Image (cartoon, rainbow over all chains, first blue to last red; front, side):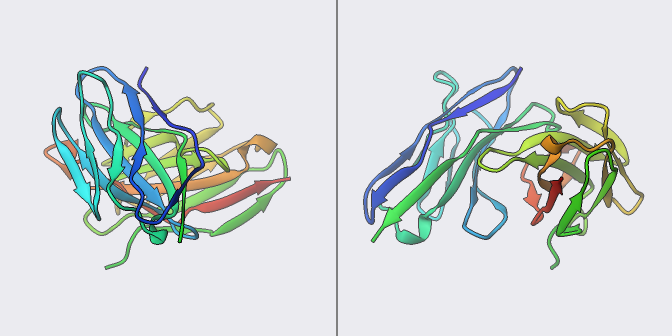
Length: 112
Length: 116
C-alpha cells in the first residue's frame, strides 16, 4: 500500500539557517504530494502541493519538488525564521483523490 | 468565510461507551474526510465521504463508522470505546471538481477525545 516516510525530528536550527526536511513515498499510480504545517496551538494547514512529476510547490519561502525517479518530495527553505517553528507533515493523496496518507511529522525549532 | 467546524471541542468517555463527533465543511465543499491523530504522530486516515457515499476507508475496525448528510455535514461514530481510541479526531473538507478531488484539504480544529 501507499506510505510516506519523513525524517525524524526534532530539527533545531538557528535563525537564517538553511532547512531541509526529507520525505520519501511509496505509491502506485500518480499521487499528489503535499506539505502541511501545524503551528503551536493551531490546526493543520496546507503549506504547498505538487500534483505531478517535476512540479515544484512553493509558499512562504518554502519549496518542494515532486521527484518521481527518487520518489521524494523534500521540503526546503533558504533562511528560516523563529516563526517557522512548527510541526511539518508530508502527505500523499492517491490517484482519484480519495485517500490521504500522512507521514509521522517533523518538529522544527528555530532559535533566535 | 467560516472554515471547517467540529463539535464538540473536547469529550471524555469511559471504555465501552459510544461517541458521535460532528463536522461541518466549508460552504461549497462536498467531500469530508476523517482522521485520527494520536499525540506525537501524523493523522491516520479513517474515511472519506463524497455525495453521501463512502469513497475511501483506512485500516480501522468496524467500530468506526461515519455518514454524510444532504447538506454535506458529517458524523463519525465510534462504538465500544477502547483506551487506545483516545486521540484528536480531525475533519477535513475539500472541493470536488469533475468527480475527482482537487486534493487540497482544509482541516477543522479537531475534537479531543479522552477515553478513561
